[in-house]
Length: 241
Image (cartoon, rainbow, N blue to C red; front, side, top):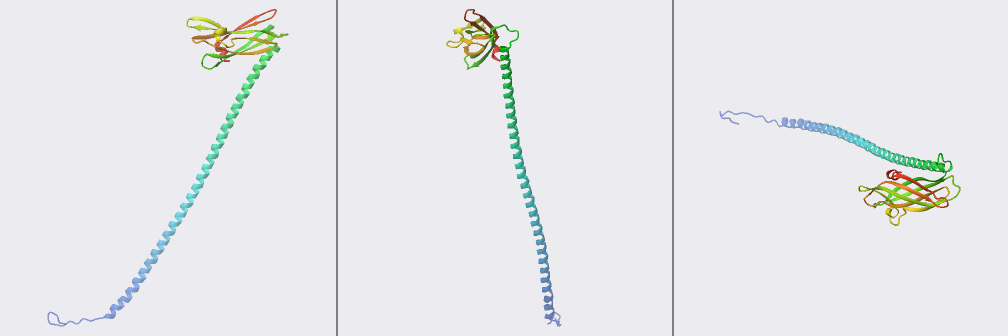
């Protein structure tokens, strides 16, 4: 080949060197790629295995927490049930104790009552007014009364009439009501007859505008030697017995 100066330059063509270069580079590139692939695969496999292990560990922990949660719920349910049973038992015990105390007081009162009849102390023979109780019924001023009469060391039946008188205030005036004034058709008075004791029960009605202060119980016997016995009870005392 001629140059610009007219001289010739000779270029040597060496195809064998190029072929040899490709023969060396291609295996090296292939080996490097394979090595990179193996390294990446190994690293990926190790990372995947670690993630799976962590996932399994988390699943085990979750299962353990769920079991603990269920056990706590069951334990709490048992505790609540035991508490309800204990509260119900305590309530029944309190009711039972209250009933026993009520029955005991009633028995004591009854025993005192019978003692006062069988072996009275410092009480004269004859008819006595033992007690008066009042209990409101309804909202129209109506009350149930209960009177207990006794006979001390009596040898026969005593008969007579019981009458209630209400003493109170109506405005600025003192009033004393009895009979029909304590309710038309009610039992402000009634008869009795007994040997040892008798419970009498009836109803009275306090008229509107009257403020009760006391109740007078009047007992009159019949027969050859009639007798009258009276006893006053404060209204609040008879009402709260």
